[in-house]
Image 1 (tube, helix red, strand yellow):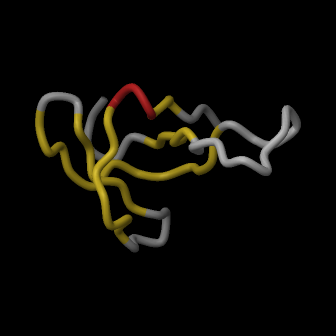
Image 2 (cartoon, rainbow, N blue to C red; image 1 turned 45 degrees about the horizontal axis):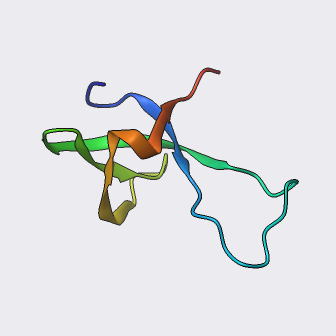
Length: 63
């Protein structure tokens, strides 16, 4: 994964979710590579998301 790649991030399950609830949301853009599989993400308009995400919770977005 590289800077500016488009990604989907995994949605953590809640108690009220069911099998029709989406598993992924996005797309987001990689803002920064924090290190060892951790990335800071940003919305497509440039607004950063406050936490980092592990590569296990990310998937490439193909448009």
